[in-house]
Length: 398
Image (cartoon, rainbow, N blue to C red; front, top):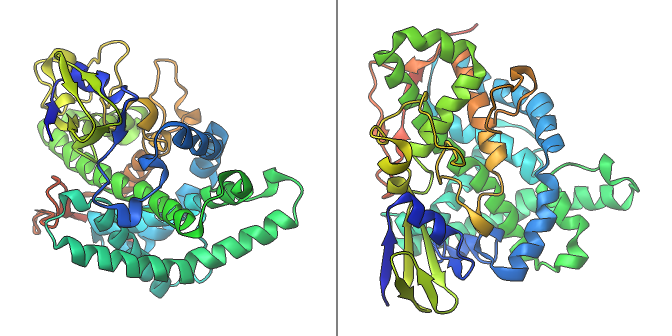
């Protein structure tokens, strides 16, 4: 087996857009990722993505951002207000769990502390299984934990959520009156998709973990970069706190520097030509280094490795680089997490900001700052450069 690695931006673009290369990053984590959308290829991938795209519409996102997300963020923050402090990683898991549970179609009838802790534990277990390729733990132990968590998830959450939606579908002639979530879309199209129950279970679990896991780390990295930026540029505080468009740009710049997955892995489905006149065959491994591609000075300038939300990005290039991928395997939930990139004439009162910027706005409204008496720590359970603990202070309330 040969291994090919691409670290330059243009090389990465060409490789990501090559349809003869199949997703391979999650092969090790098939216990949770087997046959989920992101791991499919060709017609099967195209068919399922087309159906699931029905929920990823501007109107659906607007509904969530206007009506659902603000209330959910405040409700999740409420228990931390009295203490005036929190661990941003833990809070990120909690708030994004609540947000993605709604979008995935997982009902939480009790909304109790016990129920939240149970689903949170499952989410973290699913995430450890999906990112098994980068885990520093014993892989067999992780796989066993994921299997047990899936069984519990099916019994406690997925099963009842399916029953509720099937009743609604059978008793409702207007699809517009049904829940706007992934599970409902899958059930409405179950005859066409013919998904076995175990695949449907992993698909919903994947959306639950993908929407939370990736955005958690984007949130913490963005907070860290913004606080460092403000220390160097205190005159920018008003811009960041009062201008949501600029705050979103800060989030996008941080996302460029810190893609949730620092690499993408692909495997050829046939003999394929790669950049630099290289040829790969079936069984070879192709690595796209997103971390370094997003820091390519030829694209993002001499200070490409630095956080600069005022950076001028070349025309035709995403300001967050390749962090959400390209081609058939580009992130289906990109606009949910990051929102829409603003234009010069964008109305800030009628703009889609994405979950990370919305959470950041709420935290800054409570004057969130790093806790000077408690140092953050990196996550030692993974090879990915993620924060494992990030204590912050907020204005106490009550």
